[in-house]
Image 1 (cartoon, helix red, strand yellow):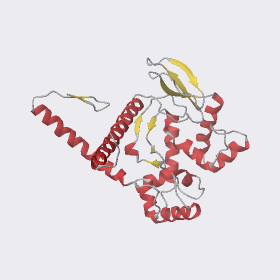
Image 2: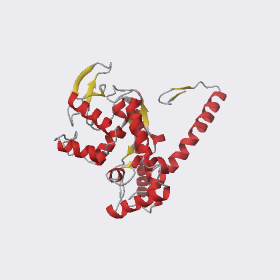
Image 3: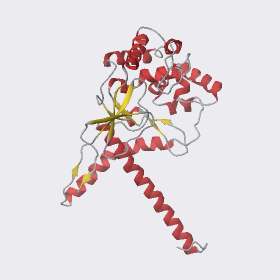
Image 4: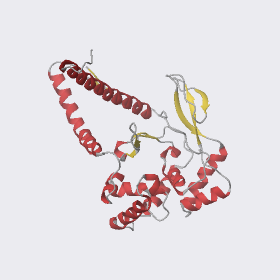
Length: 296
């Protein structure tokens, strides 16, 4: 159309912008649903494998093809990626980290030990308290495929999603850590803050904010004298709520998270009403158990 500044052009331009925004929103929903379905089927979606693990490329029938190097991506749409144990030396280091932690060593002590032996992370960086803590809390080491723990929109910051928003498939990969040992480590992490009151935890969080000028999960995990980010998430129902209680507001508006929770609570009722209406009108409806897609 001729964008000449006339009333007609302005109306058409507004309509086309609205259509473009709606198309982007629908595409985002479809892409997320497709990725979530692949996660539930046990396939890896993006991101490095992590220390002690490797990404294995498999074909559409699940047959192994090749191990992917760091930064390498699959080139065939029907191929999929799964996680497999890495070199035995790395696997033994991961197992040693869990063993030392359960026996009483702190994340900082373990990081110092590994750096003293010249062991680097999977990104060829020295170990820190935060990187050790993240290894100790990641379920991929017991074979669970967990996705959407964080969200990242274009030109915005990463945010931590509450556990009820995570997409997961348990026992999707071969574990390199015994589940009982993993659970013991989680109990130790959770117990470290049990003796702290909410007020004390918030006071510590406030001091971290004053020291760093901002807050994030990794910043909290790097603090030797503070509970972990997972503890704050568990105690206050999410990091965002803990941030709000100490007066920290991230750069973007996160109210959509609360709106999404309410929408998810309404979703089953709305779907049930739609199904009832369609069947009452004489239609036949089949709901797919994994994707929730309705075939009418």
